[in-house]
Amino acid sequence: MLAMLGIYYNNNWDAKSQPFMSTRLRTADGETYPIAKVFVNGVLDHDALAEYGLPRLTATFAYAMFMANAAVCIRQFAPADTVMPTTRKQT
Image (cartoon, rainbow, N blue to C red; front, top):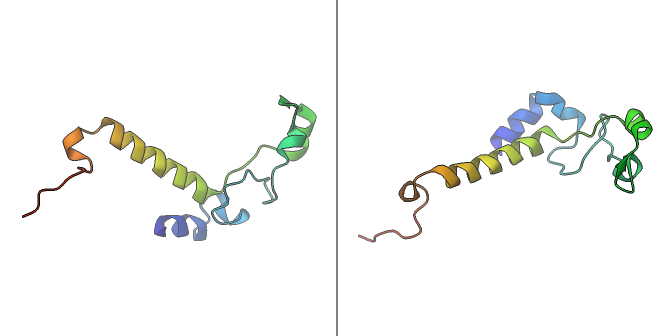
């Protein structure tokens, strides 16, 4: 959480232009991205994309997704006996 606060308050990746920890796609000014207008029946409308721009994620949400994926990768590739053993010997 401290890393996310640091990202937000230091304005990394223009973080302060977006709501903190939002999980929605956003426009550059922080409004909800109009997905249905840009993808009509699942097909990209190039004129609408030019009007609304590319969708954006909040910096804190992108960081959270990075950390979640890193945790999966560590669990996937680390030797089985070094990652969170399920049982411990009691002394």
